[in-house]
Length: 356
Picture 1 (cartoon, rainbow, N blue to C red):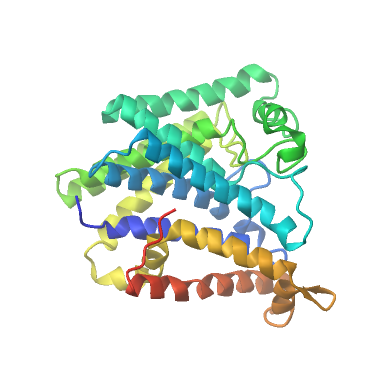
Picture 2: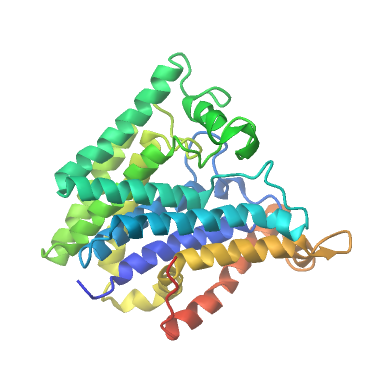
């Protein structure tokens, strides 16, 4: 299939738009827009799994044309991991005090790199959809069982769980996000890979020769089934983005499948397509805008301006305090995200695609 699937661009663009918003808060925003503190699910918790899902869907589309070699897979993993390390190191570079003693090893791009690699290798081994689905389920079962066996009385205690224990071994206490765990740590890669595989299977549905109506039905039915499975799994595990638990992966996968079905129904070849254009533009260069946003934010935070930094100065002289502190901070995040739509649209009109 050589034709670009527009709904997939919108899917990626939606994930990136939420990420741009979440990276921007200059102060406390409305709590229902923030990540759940430990367990639970908020709008913010949908973004990263949605992008992992979209990465799997994109992989299915690209592999229908040409299967990537092991060398190409490892090269992409290396590039993503290196950029992620650079983003973690950038604040100290801007401060002129480069130090590797407490450099965080993992992060969003690193998680994407590892789940992409593991997911693609699984696809190359199992080939058929049923085998890939079984592999995804096995990853979730393995992840859940590990938590339960490590600490049977309280498997998901915030300060004592298997994911945190793995983090303390590798990469070690000096190289993780918090003193007890890393939300993008190594153990969460297992269930995170299942999210990528769910996206890959969705991509196989999009590639099928069946009618659009049948594709929408299959995506929706699969989404509902995953939501039910995830809900039932909550009797054993918590829903936690920070640990990327099995029910978290399943519930997000169900939401992603249903959302993709809606996009296929109402966006692809539809009169309302123009209203989704901003998300489609972002979705054509998703990783570029994610990286660019983080670089720009880090630089703005590093520029001194009076008794604060330039980014907070901008906030203080624009939306701070409008209606309420939370509303002002939330509005600033929205405006920040809208600014990125300008270069995204320019890139789209110039047909510029920057692959990472």
